[in-house]
Length: 206
Length: 206
Image (cartoon, rainbow over the protein chains, first blue to last red):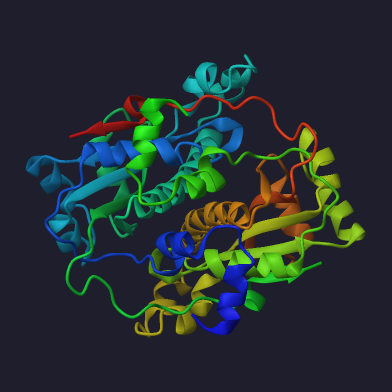
């Protein structure tokens, strides 16, 4: 970290160690050790990131942990290019999808507004847009949560998402957003870090 | 926190204090004190969350800080219902949008693949989908970053996003994803916390 960067890091309330764990030193892993990822670890991750905010508390993210060799095979077939090999060897693979029927949960998730479910019931197109946006927020929280657990995430969008929908969500109501490999980083788990856009390329003031 | 929850919290590498700051105690704020949010704070937030992963490092998020009363007025007009009052009084308001021309930055952001820009150049529909998904991931990282700075975020999607696009992004290439109020929480900044879905309602194993 340069002195310039350290000055920014000091301006945050989050400790430098946590900044490194979640963002500065965390990397997308392409290889993993054989150490397994337990259900208890995934429960701990979910118990943290479930608190991340969504629109009207709609929480559309659904997670499928692909643990059986048979299911892994069905998933790998629909991954693209290099993602096939990575998805074949990761200790744990999670399919992260948006539930377009999130509104059916509003009696539990938004109980003070009894009409909330009906606002969405007749508009499948709007539900799809809302579900995709909010599930994507939750995918990001999940990636942060994997790192919070001391694990490395390998999120991927290079895949035939519609085929994965058909394979893993036969109800037709889910949309796969990302597939995430999870584990402890293995040998040569990543390449040199890619450049980020500068503040002045991203932020303007009006 | 119950003993059951504390057991999950202990399974994470992230410290309990950081878990609280970013997720467990952090809340969406609806009121704020008058204390300003400085450009230096926003720079520190960006310098952290810019490291969050995106597909092919595409980084489509663009941020407009709405500081002038004139611009604030133009924005508030397109917010929905209760979001108008909140957006009127927040110390800082940020418009978070997806740049559908993210591929023009690939020579900088994905330099080892010279053909990356051309892969997207002819397909505006695909660029829009990719930009919306990845900007949503970055919106979530940004919300986490606001909290990391010890500030409260008030993210909103209840708005006329197309009208905000026309008002703030006349090039026609940006899609507003969320508007985020930022500041220190004020009096009665939030209501009782809304329920989250249980692990078994969200996670399945195959």
